[in-house]
Image (cartoon, rainbow, N blue to C red; front, top):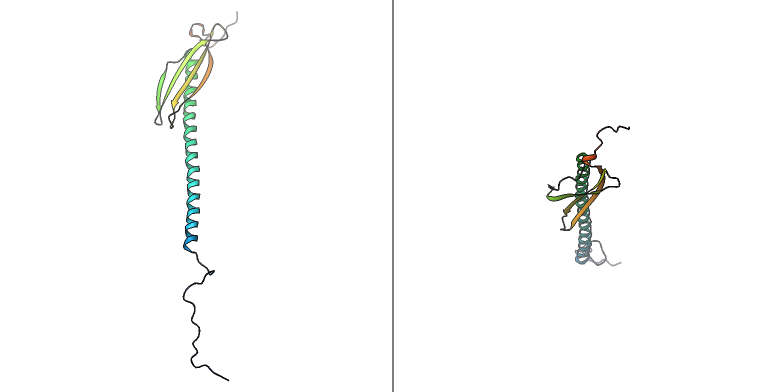
Length: 145
């Protein structure tokens, strides 16, 4: 039986061998690139949804102004005067046109609200109503003869 006198126990390896756990520099860079692309995509989606929200708010404001213009036309019995109204950093132009209605004592009033949106395009909404003309307004009661 032989005994080795100069036997040294094996030391644990001080460096990592290929194939063992951990990430290489290339793997880390690829992971960061994928993460950056995901962040850019999410940012784009958020930006477009915010733009859609602003457009919806502009249209809602214009619709409310349109309804007010139609109600005014009905209360005064004709086309309301033009107006410029500034709301939320935008200027809304309200115009109206009166035309002959389907009956002699009716007028067709069309109200239009226009504004320039955030991207610079001119947008408008319009609506019409039939109103009794001031000269032939029947008042609160109709009397049959």
